[in-house]
Image (cartoon, rainbow, N blue to C red):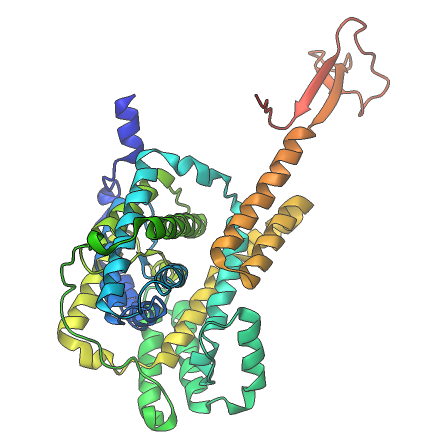
Length: 467
């Protein structure tokens, strides 16, 4: 029993046997793309969380390596996310002024508790509960999240001023209201990046097409005039290694922080599993929930000692990692190391990366996340499955992502319980026309005679007895 338990939660990377020169090359280019993509994202997410921008980059260095090496997904990339950043800000902003040293200290305390909770869930093998997240819920959630990602890039690919924090519907309304104020040069850079990446993917699939799109966009931005025509760039990146830190438990109010940490932990776990299953459905990989819980828990637990705030799996960066051709979690290690090199040495060059080019690439990634064949299969399978998909998809667009997942799970469980409580009971009888006198449904052959002493039935569906 002890050996079985250890095998279900041990974090030993069982993918080492797949590493070779070919996979290392693919992982390097995927990591290079991921490092470039996370630069502006990390800065923006840290600001959403109320932290100094550089903390977003710190969170994109150490935790992704730990989560990648000790988790089960071959392609998922962890680090700063929008959902976790928003919850951290909502939890701490009423207590202390954002951006202050006290605020940073409390953010690290929350990160420590988040890791502790997630690791505890993994060690207790509670990953079984995510089996209730059906494939239909994951597809609906992925489709909605992909559209949200594309909508979030409208301001970056058009140059239209759209304030942060708006819903998807509000963002679209503002976009169309200000459509005539769009910057043609910004749109051109984004479009060229998008089209060049698509052409490379179609004509030269062995090349890193996402990097090719970014380079093309950077060249076009320089030719058009750069900042002089309104094209924004990443800007200067602070240099330096992630400093060692220690969560200051002395100033923490555990009664107020622990519930927030639990919420962040649950959101992070559900998001990570949903992302892992989503990418796994495309790559053909099966995700081990317990290992993923352990990986996420260790990432946040250790990250709190390296100036990282609570992170989780990222839809955008995981999609970029998979689409860029990553083969193993070594790609995440490359991404973190390249990001570290950028911060230490060539940060002035990274400052010239145009944000519209990144926006065009992210839009392409979001399109690739939409699995049209699977959606068609769901639509043809049953009304219940299509209802689960539709509710999850629509709620993802209209409400917070974490609540959309919960709603999809609740609807899926409701339909499951309904099917269990109302199984199809088919009456059967021996069929003398068959050589082995096997059973046949009475409904198909009403002329068959039932046995007068015993009734033969078949129960179609799962059997469940509540005690």
